[in-house]
Image 1 (cartoon, rainbow, N blue to C red):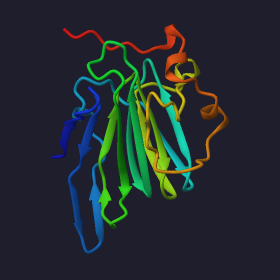
Image 2 (cartoon, rainbow, N blue to C red; image 1 turned 135 degrees about the vertical axis):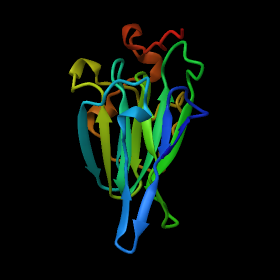
Image 3 (cartoon, rainbow, N blue to C red; image 1 turned 90 degrees about the vertical axis):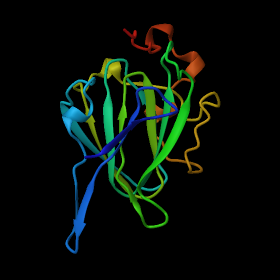
Length: 188
């Protein structure tokens, strides 16, 4: 069984440390099971991204979609920022390095990112990221916030990163239009 813990920095973000099975042939790891996230919706689409070293992707966010990320190759610095008004962790930023660590160990942790939490990653080496989402691609729900916003204070671990045109144009948090600012779900 994996160890699943809620982040102590951002409410609703779950870190999954899967069980690893290995022998002289290599290893096997189960990276995702639906029942690990009983309050989440079913993941319905799988995606893969490959990046060369030195890229920053994000920060992106969705009003309606959750993501589940896993890095099977290389090293990624994941940056998350809680944009959800009314969240107990609104404004919190966290980073976690996933994949092949500098000391040679491998961090197989998966990360569940709820709607309204901005997410991005820096490729600290050439890397692959896989991610599951609980909604099909919807351009109206593909939103972003500036990767270098001082209010967010992200430590990407790269200098002079390569960015997409989209990510270069994302607004600062303070400039997100009010109708696109995420709200925390009401608690029962």
